[in-house]
Image (cartoon, rainbow, N blue to C red):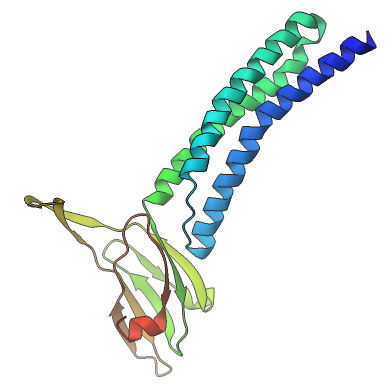
Length: 205
């Protein structure tokens, strides 16, 4: 009997490992990507490793279910112990859906790290679709995010696709005298991650 208990515990332990591995790996990958993007405006290429993690989820999930079925057949009176690894598989599935939706949404935004290396104050950053103010409270280095807006010219397609214009984004800077002046920022497209120094804006770089 003790030997059977040891074998049963081994099956459950393997089931837990197989069920948890994709969840832990996938969550770590997504959180790393999210952290780099939202806090440092840096892009991280996770598509390949995310694909293999998804593949592992289906393979490991199937293996977990098989082990749980084997465990139930061998130890019918302890079948409730298989509920936990099965629950982890189900939770992982819904977690993948949440991560995927967040990924798709954030991929539509541009992330820019603003570095104020000048003696001017950043009053606001704005376009005709958004406005960010009170930026001086964020310090000299901070990250902004916004949805770039495209206007397509459907009547005059170009040779590589439809013509479009990207709505401009401006920054308002003010000096010690309180006078404000607007500057045009570089063009940022959907999914872009970039760093921008205020000195480059002033020098039109």
